[in-house]
Length: 168
Image (cartoon, rainbow, N blue to C red; front, side):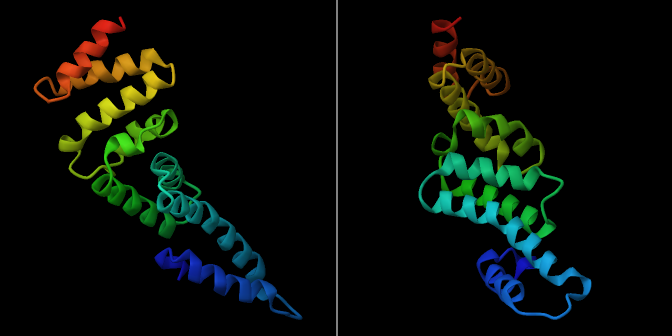
C-alpha cells in the first residue's frame, strides 16, 4: 500500500507492525514501519487540506513533498499527480497564496503544470494578485510584467498592464 501512496491503508498495516509484540526485531522492521508511517503524515495532511477546500495550502504541501529529495519515491509520484490534478480541477486563483506562489517556479520547471502554456498566464496573474494582497508589490510587479512579456495577447494582459501603471 505504501508503494502505491495509499497512506491510509499503509498506516493501518504499519500500526499492526508497530503495536505487535516481538521478542526480536530483525532488520529494524518496527523502526522502518514508524519511519514510513511518519513519512505519510505530510501527504495525508495535504490531502486533508485539499478535501477541506484549502487549495493553496494543499498545493504548497504537495509541492514540498514533490520537490524534496528526502520524500519516498511513491509519495513524490503521488504528490506530483495531485498537483497536476489540482491544476485541472481548480482555478489558479483558488490555489494562489504568497506561500504557494513561492513554489510556482519550481512546480513549473519540474513540469507539474499540465498544459502549462495555457495555464501559466492565469497562474502569473493569480500569484501577482496574491502577492499584491499580501503587500509584496515588487513580486506582484514582476509577475504582471512577466505575463505582459510572455503573453502580451492574453486576456489578462490588459489587467496586468493596468496594475503595473497604478503601482509603479
